[in-house]
Length: 446
Image (tube, rainbow, N blue to C red):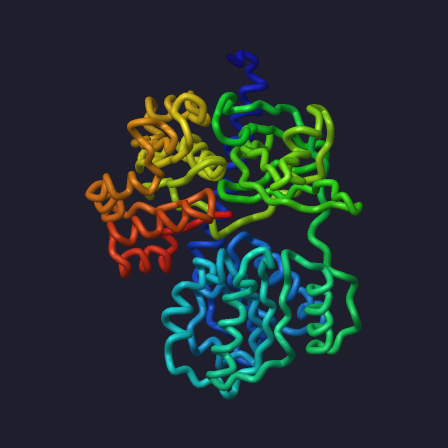
């Protein structure tokens, strides 16, 4: 208990500042209507799933501004067909998620624009396609977009630039094409914002005795970093690579700035030969408490939460509870009474009830309205989390009918597809599609 009035005032001020920042972010990115594309300008159309595409769109716009030219950024969710034909040229920055899918923000564009008989014969375009070669359908959405643009008569300004997992050489290629378009001299290589220094202050195994791999709670405090993010944002951590330099890995932030530290839930992964994974091994086994890790926290607008008056259905499995936990923490700070329902799946009830005391406290004080967990290795259960959706179909429909937003966080393989199929069965394909296009169905899956 804190009985120092000065410390109480500082704590209250921190919460007020954080709430103000959260409100400003929601207002800026959700409430403000997107203006129509300006005639004669360059339109930068971005479909980002984790925020990296948004960063590259900002850098692209600055390249035009530095050359004294006008460029406007719009999300695929905001683009109408007239925007494509009004702009002098269109630069697409398109991420691929999973096995060749479009980001959720591009769902409406794919359905309404790409399936229509558009005539884009007067449109000139460039394409930066973001993907990951570990997936079979590398840059699948970007390639589908490129094919559609050409079939609609649009003229490419240059060959599509494909980026494998943030490859710097491909991004330099994009920079070079922008320099040619703007007529400016070659600019210095783009680089993401520098890593700050964060000190590991806590590491704790959450599931001793589990039949699955160890899941570790980690907490970092900033040495020279800034406590500024909102629920849904992602941390990039620089991990020492065998060949030298840093390999970056992304993790959902499980805490809020008002906690005074960035918290994560990281599972120790094993390679086929039994050795620890590069990043998870370093973070959970090698890095000592008190030592420094390079880190930066990046905005991930695609997984930012709704306003406090909107009910939330939170669905996840495994370490995906990290991204959902930050949303529940936000609800607690807001004092939201709109309702939150957590569906969560893990292996065993005896060993894998992550953050159980915290969840039970939220259940008691009303932050968490419903808590349904499944345990796939338990006798008498054996279910995965999507089974809750099917078993509670009527309640799910009722919550959605009252305006609930659905947030999914966890594994892409198995869980995300199973949850999507169950929601489609319970709500109907058209209703689920509408939720995606209205921003009421959001996913952070990996």
